[in-house]
Image 1 (cartoon, rainbow, N blue to C red):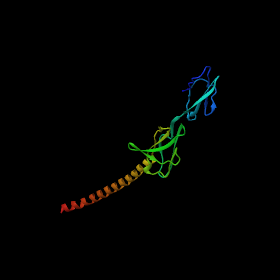
Image 2 (spheres, helix red, strand yellow):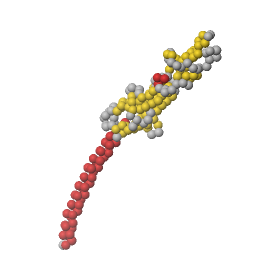
Image 3 (cartoon, rainbow, N blue to C red):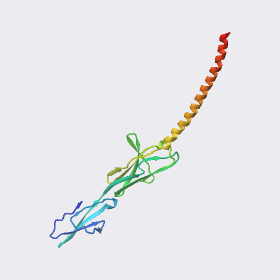
Length: 196
């Protein structure tokens, strides 16, 4: 709520304006703002009228960031593909964006090509991790939910390991068979020698 106090009188009347435009029906000393969005922000003026004339005073209404990241979930990507993370924040004035990547308990700044959007191209294994978007306006910050890049990168590792393990198992069985064959081949010879 924005209050307008006047000392003159009597018979004061009021008119509120937003960015120079009269607000229809807003003719009381108090202005209540509801359903606030980014466009709510701006310059609000209270004009007071009486028999002696008129006077006005203005104040600036800021809307601090409310932030949404798309998509705020696990993103499954393949090696050498690309992914676009979109950070959508509403504030007045317009927010400044900063993308961060979690590294343990700290965060590292990520260079974004277009402020609110983070485009990661030619993804490799080192790009896996948690990404956050930070939006700031007038000293107030809002941080997004986490977006995790993972999935097929890890699956690729598991697939490679599984493929190697199959080959390892194959050679292990082959070696086992060869050893068994040689062992069973030697035994009759040893028995023949024992008979002599």
